[in-house]
Image (cartoon, rainbow, N blue to C red; front, side, top):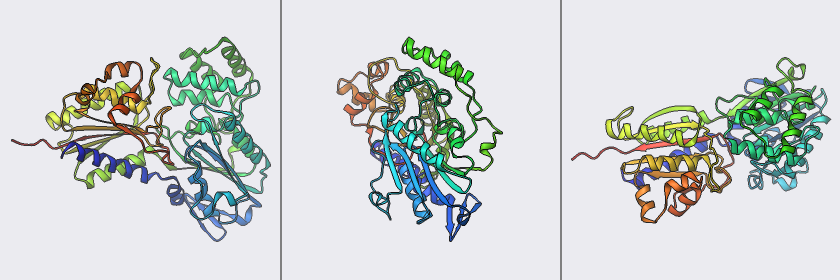
Length: 453
């Protein structure tokens, strides 16, 4: 199997994984309607019991999820407001053009750093949620990215504070769990506070998970679920990573976290009439890739969907596994495919451009220099890896030789976090555009069968 064949195989795995977590299909798998009976993950709701049906939500997959629910409700929707990332709003539903639906509002906003539209969208959702009464049904659609896209600053904080804070946390190397712990305690809509606004209406939350292990309180900062974290936990994150972009920001945040009311906790009666359903996840995408690889004749193993830590450290592990397969057939004999999922982090040291998957691929290229018959693909399932138009990158054992021939310095690019420029010059960036879904990152390691003499 030649290098070009490995690249084609990797593209097939990528497509199989993305198809498995297409948001509209994921919603339709879990939500069904027959007449007035709406069934969601085995629980039935008689629509005749509700005066109004509202749809709210946010995330990179918000648009396709919303169109799926609108089609299922088929005329029973009263009003809807969802917020998605710029470029991720689908122009129209397969059945109903969005421009002709006055009850359907899709707002595009900033990600990963929130902007004025993030606040505008969150305010619109809060206003709609507060209209709900005990006789209403509210369906909340959540996917990755909603933590930034739904921004409603807590009393005493301004959008500029949260923009600076988000930037500092993203550069710090903090995990998404830690970042969202802070976000929840700086918001009037996260950390269960949207459920507080909706109560006492019936609340159903459909989630496309982008967080390792699918913890509901972390995904999108848990706007509709109980929050087990505290303001003290949030302060500890700031201290752990020395988040002090400016003295003004630090002091104002510290004051806010001390004085502001706690988020709703488990056992709070506002959660009595709620249902939560995870409709898609990283594991589902990874399993689809595994099945596709096996159909293609690869000996295949799903290593984990809990991969995290520094991207370049994860790269060394992936490279070591590839070498073991190539040299000894351990843990699989070639042709082999390893799949893993999760979300690594990057400690920003330089002024370059890139993302965690591109950085992982670059570190792996250095580690696999001179190893023929090996390919690694690292990608963000939403199509956006860091603040770039790349979804990730592909490398082989020949990547470094090609880079040297073009005069590219891989080690310098790694140290300055400039993986995007490196792979752009090689033509090895993955550019999918917005995929419409978001279930964390995937990594494929392919090793071709050794040619016998």
